[in-house]
Length: 634
Ligand SMILES: Nc1nc2c(ncn2[C@@H]2O[C@H](COP(=O)(O)OP(=O)(O)OP(=O)(O)O)[C@@H](O)[C@H]2O)c(=O)[nH]1
Ligand SMILES: [Mg+2]
Image (cartoon, rainbow, N blue to C red; front, side, top):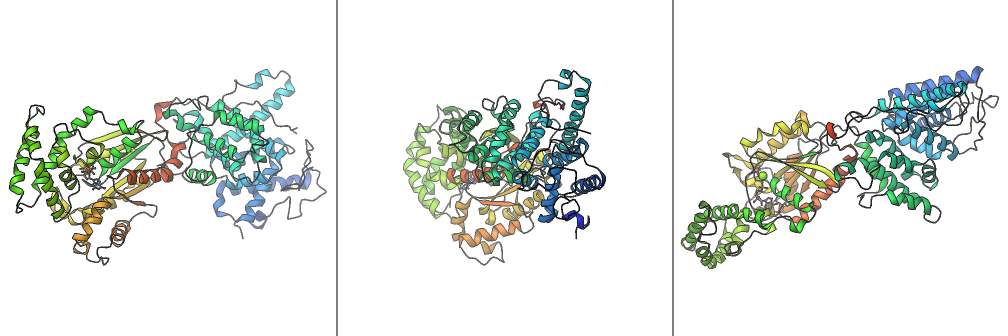
C-alpha cells in the first residue's frame, strides 16, 4: 500500500465512485479518451469541492515528496489524469493554479515522462489550452505587461488573477530547474526543460496529432523568438539551441508531408541541417534528460581533461582530435609547422638508434648516421648542415629496418622512425601527418585547446603525465567536465622513466584509482582509454604478460590479455566507467573511438554546455500575460 494511503492509487474522477454524476461540475469523469464537453465554467460546492481539494492536496503532497520513478504505474496514471483534469479551465482559478503549479514543477524539474504520456492521451482540445498556458507562462520576451492595455476595472482584476496564475506556474517551474540552470546562463537556457518536454511528447506520440497541436499553439514562433539567430549563430552560441533543434527534429519526423506540407516548410526553414542525432530521437531525448542532474555535465565546464601517465598517448590523441575536427584536416599543418617537427623527429630517431642492439654487425656502420643526426640536432642552422652526408647513409637505413624487426621488444615510435629512416634522411624531408602523430615530445605544463566538436565549443586540455607534471593537474580538477584517462596497454613490461623500480602499468592503475575516486570527480564522467593496442598485440607474443601479472593465464592471446588488463583497471572503478581499446596512431580507429565518446557522452550534454558566467548577462525573467486561457472565475 502506498505510504499516502489507499486513496492515493485511485482517481476520484474515475474509480472510487465517490465523485458521482450528481456532481455540479461539468466535464468530470471525462478523462482518458472519453468525450469532453467544454462547459466554460463550473461551480463546485459541497462535498465535491471538499473531495476535489482533498485530492489536489494529495497530488501536491505526493509530487512534493516523490519522483515518478518510485510510484506504481496505475497509481501514477490516475494521479496524472486527475492533475490534468484539475488544470482545465472549468475549475476555479485557485484550483487550476495549484494544478498548474504541480505541472510546471514537473516540467521544470525534468521529471515529466509520465506527464507527457498523460498529456498525449488527453483530448487535444484540452492539451491545446494547457500547452498555450505553458508557453505564455514561459514567454519572457513579450512587451512589458498587457495589464497596461486593459482599461476597465473588471478586466484588470481578471488579468491580474491570470497574471498570478502564470506567475505561480513560472515560480514552480524555476524552483525545480536543475541546479545552476537559471543563474549565469543565457536566458534562453531557462526554457530547455520545457523544450525537452515538448520534444519528448512529440517523439513519443504515435500519431501526428500532437505535433500539429504544437504547431497550432505557435511553438515555432516561440522558438524563433527565443533563438532569433538559430541558424546564423556562431559555434559558441549554437549549442544553446540544441533542445530547440531537438524539438524541430522530432516534429519533422512526426508531421505528415502529405497533410502538413506548410508547417513542414516553415519548420525546415529554421531547422539546422547540420543537426545530428546518433541514436533515435526518443533515446536521444531520454539520455539528455537523464544527464540533467549530473552537475558535471558541462555546466560552465566544457573541458575534457586528458589525464594519464607519461607516454601513454594523450598528446597523440589530442593531435588526432585537433586535426580531425578542424575545418580542413588535410591542410591542418602548414609547412612551417611541419618543419618544426624535424628536430624532434631526429631526436626520436637518434634515441631509436641508441636503443638498438650494439652487438649487431651493422651497428658500426650506423654510427655515422647517428653522428650526423646528432650534429644536425645540436646545431641550430639546419640549412647549412650536413644533411647531404646524412643522406649518403640512406643505404644503411635499410639495414636498420632489419635490426628493428629483430629488436627484443618493439619500441613504438622508435620502430616507426627507423622504418622511415630513408625518407627522414632525404634532403627535402618535411614531416608527414603520420610522422607528426608518431613524434614523441614529452609534454610539460598544461595545454588547453579549443575545438569545434560538431558545432560545439569544447576545450580539450592536455597534461604532462610524468611524475613531476602530475602535481600541476589539480588546478584543473574543479573545471573538469569529463575525464579521458589514457593508459597504455603495452606498459606492462616497462618501468617508469622517473623511477626504474616502478612498473608502468602498476603506476598507471594506481593513478587511475586516484582519479576515479577523487572527490572532484564524483559526478564527472570518466572514460578509460586503453591505448596502443597495436604495440600490445605485437609485444604479447614476445613478452609474456604472466611474467608481470602472475595470476594471468591467457597466454599470448590478444583478447585474453586485453580483457585481463581491462578487468584489472576496473576492479575498483565506478560502475559507470566506460572503456575503449584503441590505437591513437591509427587515425581511423581513434576517430571511431572519439565519435563514440561524442555520441554517448558529449551529445547528451550539449544543452548544459555553456561558456561561463560572462557569456551573456542574466536578465531577470518577467512573467507577462499575453494569451489567456478561456475561463471564468469565482
Ligand atoms: N604504436 C603506437 N604508438 C603510439 C600510440 N599512441 C601513442 N603512441 C606514441 O607514443 C609516444 C608517446 O605519445 P604521447 O602522445 O606523446 O604521450 P603522452 O601521454 O602525451 O606523454 P606525456 O606528454 O609525457 O605525458 C608517441 O611517439 C606516440 O606516437 C599507439 O596507439 N600506438
Ligand atoms: Mg603529452
